[in-house]
Length: 242
Image (cartoon, rainbow, N blue to C red):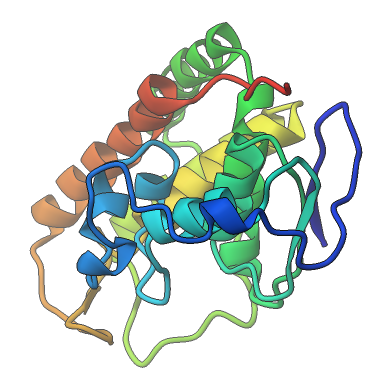
């Protein structure tokens, strides 16, 4: 279960709707369904962190919540996915509860909902600490303690041996982070980029591709660092509760 609460707690009655608000247009005068590819999610704080093919428009969610909830309460999403509904509801001041059976979107949803609890200085410190940890282990020929999960199998090697070595070093570093919120953020940074520097690609489903070793090593460093820095730049502050 995924949960996030504001200080206040006042649950609305079921279907408590202000009729005068039921036909309000969006701020731009158009419908939230005008973006069927949900392209806007790719540029928005939090929503852009995780590309998710089964997602839907955050504008649509915000519009629905604004139209049909005329007070603060608790929003329940029984199939929360990566958390589009829960995030928008929480940003609007509602308490939220969600359920998700898939571990990856559940991680994404929990991480994005709890991101406001991470101080920017703390995240910046952990990024710098990771860079020092990583460089030291690479130069010393360190053998990672982390191992590939036993149930993780693909037709061909998911990573080249050199890239896998770097990935496991990254996993070792995550184990040294004391804050569970920061741990989740580092896990999500890896999970959202892990296919890009592998021997596979989305075209549109997961398929085999051939890349050179130098390409894989370059992509692994570039994408992981970019994802973490994006979290540093785009981490929102805690929403105010009226």
